[in-house]
Image (cartoon, helix red, strand yellow):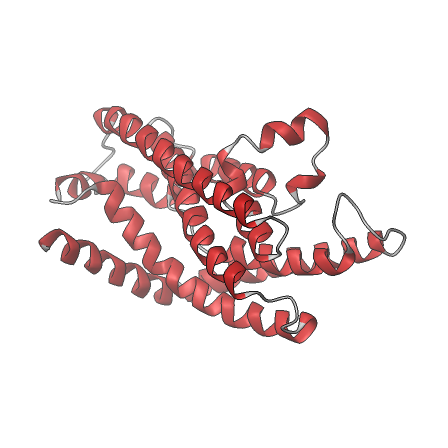
Amino acid sequence: MAGVKKYSAYLRCGFLDGCASRGYFITGMLGNFVQAVVLYYVWKSIFASHTMIHGFTWQLMKQYVFVSFLCSNVFSMGFEMQTAQRIIQGDLILDLLKPVSYRGMLFFRMLGSAGMEFAVTAFLVGSVYLAVNGTAYLRLANSLLFFLSLFFGMSIKFCIQYLFSLLCFYTDNAYGVTKAREVLTNFLSGAFLPLAMFPGIFGKLVKWLPFQGILDTPCSIFLGMLTPREMLQRIAVQCLWVLLLCAAGGFLGKKAFRVISMYGG
């Protein structure tokens, strides 16, 4: 019970940090919004001469752009740069000495900030979505499974960010690590292009990677592109990837903590 209270304190701290860093969040959200607007009009021009592309109609693609924007903004703040800064300043040793899991501490802090991000983004995007698409395409069962899938997708994204943050123990170039992770995650999760449109063997390969669970799976569930059985299978795959990535993070984390180099503090 005491452990739960400790982690709940980090959850609260994460929420307060998210509110305090609202300028950073708003800037990031505006960047994603510009990307979504660009994608919206690019797809609109493409569908002007096509009625269907790889199973997507224009009506379906409009919804995909909205939902993918929502998913991209949930847990948008990475922590690779923060990890590198704490390593250089020598503060990370204080985190490792605390009577809680370092990874658990990071997760609940990020979960708190994600709650703030999701609340703001869901209100803004939801208002625009309803104004454009109405409630005709909303299904209660799909919406409930969407939120469950979104949580697992966020967990997968956290695990991937944690693995990339461990690279900061071996390099001083945290900015490059962060940008590499952002590009890789956005491209392979379907933020730029639905994974169903990836060609040939590359499209099949991407579906075996964990990135699909971050965005493509929640979007496909919300849009009703999957059967009930396929939805449950996709969520089960998300759970499996969370377990595998957690195991990898635990193993690599132990190795990374042994090579901490203090540059001060």
